[in-house]
Image 1: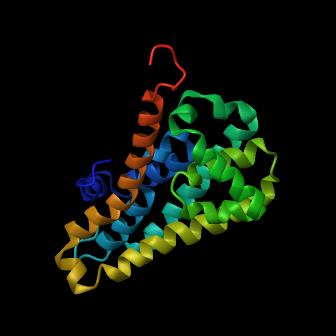
Image 2: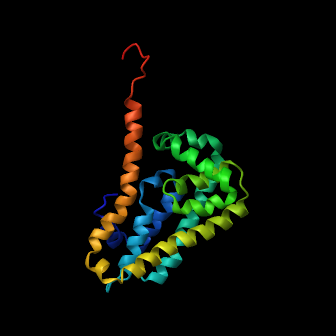
Image 3: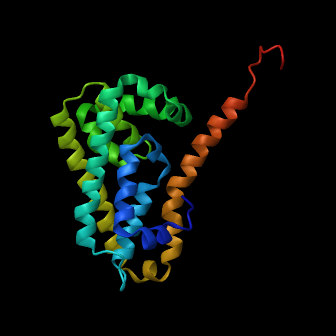
Length: 209
């Protein structure tokens, strides 16, 4: 998503478009490309404007629900396809580092990882799948998924809503939207840039080097 069109996306897609994006971010492995944090924060900021695209209270009800449903789909994919799902084309594109990071979180925090993962970029896309194929209890997963989705989605929306009422943010809204998206886009671009460079390297002992 281009850093300059988040507000346009929310204006055209509205509440339904926002819910679909949040659902896809964790329901499908391709969702890691979406800057969910930035979109939620921006949605809160826009909800605080004189002509909001949706009421803040409606956002806080529907968007966490979309996140929870997305987690459920991710869990089912992991449970049905097993660990083989990590060998797919999308997972090869993501690379081993985010998956290893997700496993480390599970080893350190156990089921609570499902809650914390909501606040960590690509990890929140991988966590439901990993929870599914590692056999985490469905009830435990759902509990932490619900708590994490509410804290993440409603929390970022309300943060944006409160800050959206601050004069300096309201008067320079576009700059803050761009800055919030760049906090996601730049690290993602760096990650894939490193993977691309690594794939281009020729081993020192390669006869063709």
